[in-house]
Length: 191
Image 1: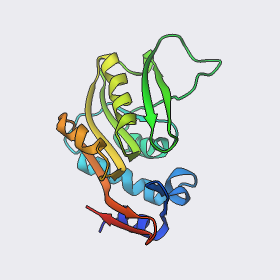
Image 2 (image 1 turned 90 degrees about the vertical axis):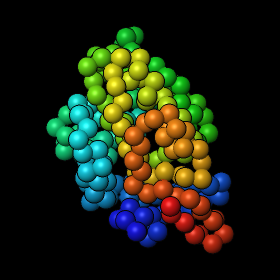
Image 3 (image 1 turned 120 degrees about the vertical axis):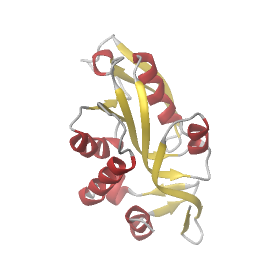
Image 4 (image 1 turned 30 degrees about the vertical axis):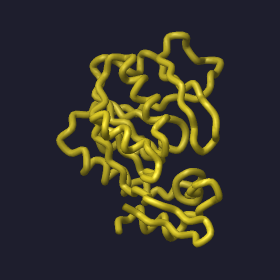
């Protein structure tokens, strides 16, 4: 069992509807030591890959991406979910369905921040159906860049996102893959 699986068993809570709540160390309050370990593990797993940009989606992936960007000494870009007064018209846009929030979001990155020269490592906190990753991949492709890998802290292996991304040829690394969760027993089985 690895450090993240141990942390999930120690502090995670299973909610009805196949939801894993990890708010106290990943999604609301951040345990910097765990995030640091996740970043180091991604750096190890993607050793040999040429990376010049880290891409994530707001909000929970930003902490992981920031520490990983520091390790690679490259910029971190995050796709925004909502327009602001200073949003530009020149942006790449993709639609992403949120399994947790049960809604679609148009996510975007301003064009100057993704280019054809970019070799992008995508990172996120969770992977369920793969919709957020697919949206991020679309943004990179719109820019003409290359996705060199996808790093996910927690993959819900009982859902199809990971299998689909791997079948499409993406180098996907998940630190913890959950094969099943039982709400009644509060039991998690890892792959």
